[in-house]
Length: 383
Image (cartoon, rainbow, N blue to C red; front, top):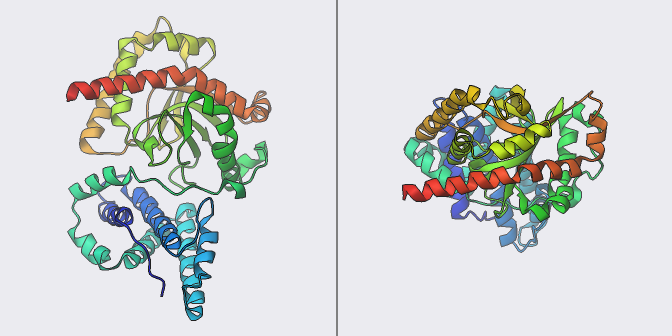
């Protein structure tokens, strides 16, 4: 039988996934996070096991790695088909978890995946024992630890390299495959000079209904840093593309710093420039859905005081969510631009998408730097 190589990172991910599932009825967002970490722990174990069997996993997709692992001469021939069937079945469950629209089916699949990875990890991660023993406080601590783990690189050579066209917006699965190449290859050529690096794309799952391409400034790629900081992002939905500033679901301090800067007037010069270029304020809900869109020129330079109380409320809400450990599923007063299907400029935007993204990110990079500097200043004062 194959001897799965399960390191401490994998065990932490598995324990976290089980704990998130256990408390998912009490805390919004925990089930989706359990789904994510159960699948990622599976990927991590397969990668590490293959490497332990002498297989080079660099830039290979999971299906290829599984096939090469099943063909390893270190395995008995009689075991290979059973292993291939078992791992392929788990890979299929992993894919279905991210694409299923039925909560009931997802619940069953997450449980199957959790029990499977617990079995791979052996007695240290016995499913029933972890479920019974893990506490809510342990889940919170594990989340902080696991968020620093880097995923293995994706094989961008196998991605769809065709240009994105308008018909792709009718099928987000097709659009998602093209976005992978746009995010990890094409945009890299444009954005490297800005010291921006691509982070993990959002998974294409029912909880989002959109595709998010996040970029972080001046940080190493990987480790899901985009979840905990201010980012520049591109959001694809069936009806539009939004480019601009965004925050991860756990970026409490960074978002608080952003609101503090807005209230202090230290971003007014940037806002004045954004007003001249027809940028907008956005409020979002349920991750990437836009609730309200207001041209910045309606508020800058003379009417920002009219929304000060709303910004103060958003700041207080951010601090409350941080204190209670509630994931942020929406944000207020984001800045960006939207390109809508059916508008006269949409075709031109698709033709010049990388250049437009770079120009927009360039405009907003100063705000990102200010937010990070404010965040560092507030953190040092606390210590």
